[in-house]
Image (cartoon, rainbow, N blue to C red; front, side, top):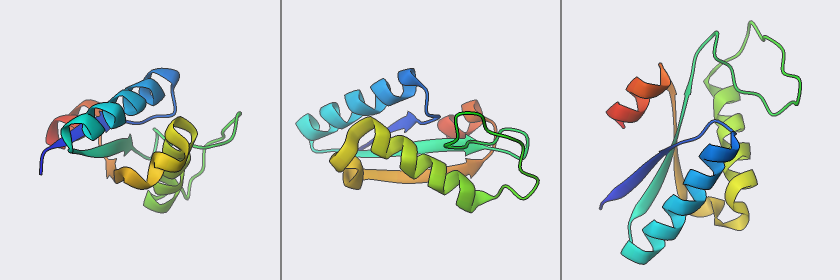
Length: 96
């Protein structure tokens, strides 16, 4: 099945891109995959004033991605596949 891949980082632009991707996917009967690239020095947190976490791991990135998707599309979040990748954002998106 064809899939639309969209980057997710919690920004307004990424949220808009995810909403657009879901709209297009519904029209074409495709899947949507949201990709969050993270790293030890590129951590994603729900907190307004995040702090560095030396124990940050993939589970934390998955929680952030889930929250970003929920914030962007609400109940439609169940329709979005998820991928968290310990990599640079550009490379993670190209690979996806």
